[in-house]
Length: 69
Length: 268
Image (cartoon, rainbow over all chains, first blue to last red; front, side, top):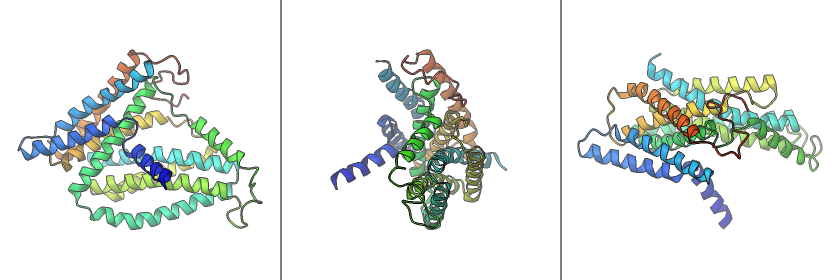
């Protein structure tokens, strides 16, 4: 039961989170930020594009840093 | 068709084409190495199973409130889109080996042949449509898993844009086109520029993910859905710029199989 459960968890982690957990966590933070800005009455459409502009280079940098060393 | 409808059609078509390439590679390997009739029967049974799943899931997905659906689907598309873009950029800049359908096909072929000693077609299976259960199972699993992704793409994109019919047509066109190419050449789909496809799909998924995720979290886009017409080219330009930057930073010398081909042009 244990290994099967682990395999099941690993499948979903791989499916949803993928190679870099920073992307998934960053998106959740971006969505929460968008919700909070909107709640405060501030236009919030720009926040997710900003997060994409930060997350993608950060993730690439993390990947290439590993492959160079 | 409106610009939004074209964006929906192209996004669903390309995303489903990638899934179809993967499923076709598996069926081709099973049929070539073992038994075509069993491989095609497995494909047919998987398609029937998919039709049942669509009949059950379709109304269920459409019953979910649109706001909640946009938030969850937007978040998932953003994660998938950025992961695909990340991989495509790493491949295009030579930091990662290109996804090689030739190699995957050879591996599947070898695996299928290695099982032949134990259960050769006509001897190991039952008589009737399925003469070889290995080919049947391999094709069934491949088509069902990739097909489920196609169903997910059609239902989520279609529901969010209020046009499941158009999304289904786009998916059907992609699957029929790729399957026809597979049947015509009966060889690995190496000429399909998979990294280019994944690069474009990554851009589309990210753009739709940003649009729907932000809307699901309560934001209002200037121009509503027309914001896609700015988001898609902006993300594309940004990604192309990152490919150039990644190339300049230098790919590791240990990957001769991944020359800095511009976003994969089927050159593998």
